[in-house]
Length: 190
Ligand code: B4P
Image (cartoon, rainbow, N blue to C red; front, top):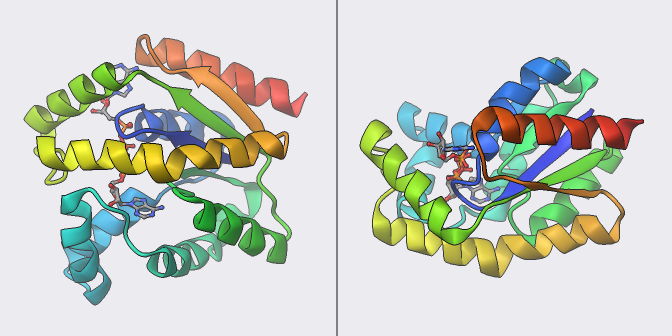
């Protein structure tokens, strides 16, 4: 199963992808986690990405594509994957399709997690208290939500137009949301 998880910051993509990987037996690839690992390692790429992430903007498409290409070339992805946080704009959606076409592994389904803005802000605020992630400050969060509306929301239509979109209501406890996603994924494979 090759799955894309779409949703605004705080919609539960990372949370649900971590559970889905066990249920589906495929690796979880989070571009946010890959970037945070580069930042933590102090690599040249990480140094470039750090300030951009802290402002809540998108890191360059070119960097992301290189990173993703590298990750998808690892053998564990031969059984499929869950992409969390990519694509985040239409250029990335097109680049992903091109890349997956070359390796003969097209996306099976994109799942959009639908959560209202107020709840997104509440969830990120509580994560900020618990984890202290440097991009969870109010100014960055406002920016990330704006970037999502302007650049990522059109990606939902991209998959809808290709008949590959499932919309899932992302409000409720984590188990409930997880059950809805699994139902959508299993329904699409039936
Ligand atoms: P991400 O790591 O993708 O961060 P995110 O959008 O905030 O989502 P995340 O997955 O972490 O949070 P979740 O909704 O699961 O990206 C960070 C930055 O990296 C971006 O701003 C950008 O700069 C850069 N980046 C990443 N990918 C990129 C790309 N493709 N192109 C360019 N730049 C890129 O969860 C949030 C919180 O909600 C958690 O604390 C969780 O516990 C809670 N929660 C989840 N589900 C819940 C539920 N049902 N009920 C209650 N709380 C819940």
